[in-house]
Image 1 (cartoon, rainbow, N blue to C red):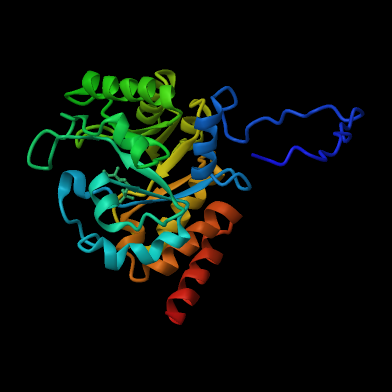
Image 2: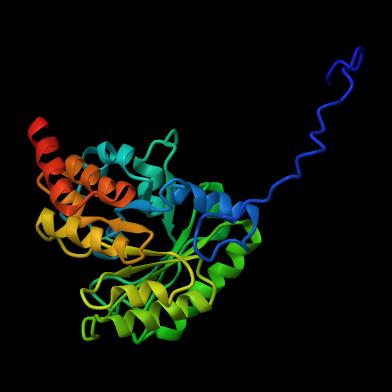
Length: 293
Ligand code: R5P
């Protein structure tokens, strides 16, 4: 209880200065509630408007992926350079120190493995668990055109409804079946469906041709997925092209943790995303950081 004796009289009302109401920096997100915006502002850097998500959730359907065999040894040293860590609750609880200040992107869909039909997912984490773990977005895989298309879409809309109740955003992850064409037309369709049905932001693949039409036709932020390991310069070029064409950041896993020098690679990636560094300069940065060890 504050001391109420000798209270100073309130006098600084600034009556000549109207209270301002600033718009929220993130595309399509201005009408969201405070808690969701606050969480999004932990994922996306408010200065650059972009994010570097480090994706390490591959084990949820494919087991110990190359580079992720020991998350404690290989991944924790990369965390300081990422804006967020995308992972499962199993890895979060067992390996990641609760003292981390990184925003946590929690994978909440699951139930399928590489041995069976991958689109046959369900919601695998209760909302109470996401609240308890203080996560930022909850990530749900959506398989447009897949065998379990409808079920995966409904998984996503359920999480949007539940998350909205508690101020937790939902990230829709567009998954592409082996036989589907990875082109702008497909990703326009997949991203737009996810956004129309309430996803707060969307993770999708980069395509060489017309990626800008995918970002332009999606009313909420898009984050580019890294995909299979490619040479470092190519990965940095892909990240550069994606953000220059409207992506609000990258979600990279294998192109970072399977790199010859993951700590150097994630820093070079961050320079591309947050500082618009060109691929050539970022590759030089990667090489010099790699040499320094
Ligand atoms: C995989 O299922 C996850 O969604 C990954 O988070 C995503 O594919 C990004 O990782 P990578 O850059 O290795 O493709």
